[in-house]
Image 1 (cartoon, chains in turn green, purple, cyan):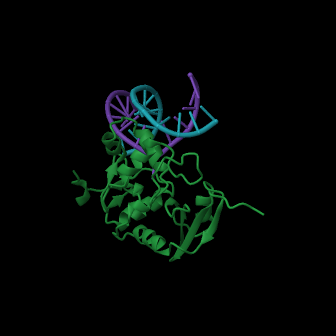
Image 2: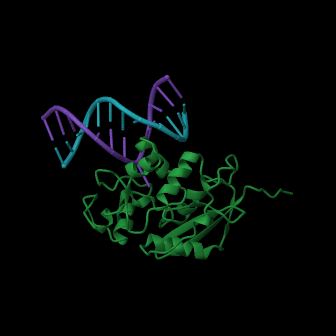
Image 3: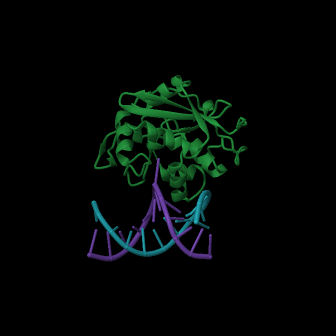
Length: 196
DNA sequence: GATTGACGCCGAG
DNA sequence: CTCGGCGTCAATC
């Protein structure tokens, strides 16, 4: 006689090539967290379950997972941002993914960066009218929706690629697949510099 | 309060 | 070019 927990989430996984992908969704069907790909299935699951301990596995949402995998592999595909849980209302709820309006504003700003383009942490900060460049970096570091919200397209002002949760290697690989030239972790001059 | 960041800038070597 | 040191600000302890 257990009770059905409202906070239980659904985790779906997909193996694409030799990498596993995972996505966590609320009962409402909104995406609350996306994991970075990994060769270890347990790792991609715990990347989500660490934040949402009560879950059950499902093999639904394969379409969503396929899209994520293809974007990761450098394809330019549309992703419906409406699928992401960006509300702050369930702050104390298990099914919230974003913790503050600051984080939300940062995520929304990063989401605007088009395929194959880059923006600096400083530029993101400036469009939010703050000088808290590091705070912006920290918020981006917590991005619950990597790949889909393209935090891999945010680099440092000195043109170094900067940090990445999944390791700098992964960030460089993703940018390469989107057509950017990188040498010694620095972005080389290319077409995408003429943004704005 | 004090410390910690996926940062930025400037000045010294 | 690389380093330190300091500015700055949100989150965390």
